[in-house]
Length: 360
Image (cartoon, rainbow, N blue to C red; front, side, top):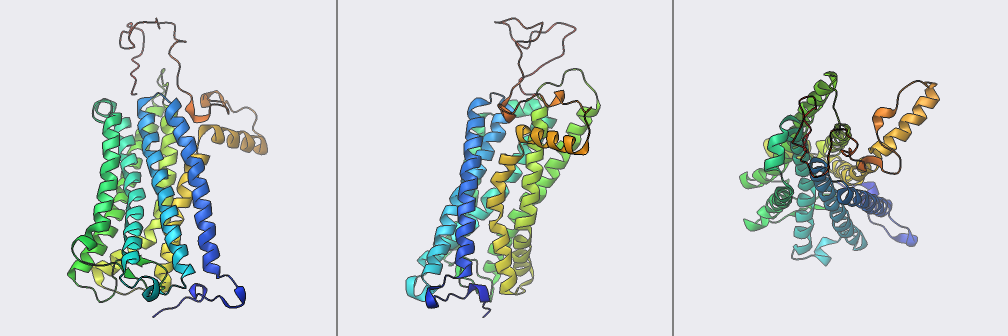
């Protein structure tokens, strides 16, 4: 059995194990960052009235809230295991806590990956087919879709228990997951189901973000006269690309390791698995900072600073169309248009007026 030097639980001379300090720091940082990002997203969702952006903010808030619950739950379980000197036979003889730990690891691992891909698909449809987006992706549909994502992840997490299999304590004795040694066909199915769902979510997000990015660049190159409301699309695409990059870096090694184990039945060194798990936990810490930092208000300030440092003074900044107080919550105003009359519909236009739809 592999034993990690930093994972050995020793409490001689009242010393604190380094792994406990790492777990406490990761849990604290994740909870604080997720709380901050959740407050920003909830405030933006309440104040922003553009439907397409509201859907995106709703899913983003659901993703951050799921990450927050994952940090609190998995972090608390990990700290309890360390506090009990990782003596599973003493504090969990019936493997009840191990099953709960394994279910939480699978559920809170799959949810961010699937939600990230759903957000990318939603943005892709909103950019490439706004009519379909406005009719088929109403807010009530978004709530049902978020619930279905949670339900799918919970089903995969509970599947081993439903068929009478148990989660197993891993070799480092600090966490529980699917069985990875002496596998039969059913054990491999569990590993492949988890890893394939995660990898498909990553590749679906990459494909949809690529299509959306090319579409936005194509629209911008047309030099159309009326492009109100399009800047928020670029902001959301930047956030989605950052989420995708963070997911690839954090979850990629973990998913690939278990895909290799499930497909080839090949054992992987426990040091490698433990490192992959620790990298994956940083996904829940980095996700909220994407929404904290990649906002137009913050990006505008960074652009100002970089412009002054580089000595460029003649770069126009009017296209940002935002201020530091409103940030990314500013919506285009229709009352300033010369052809706008109160009580009239936006669909009533004159021949020399561009068509403006509420979901463009």
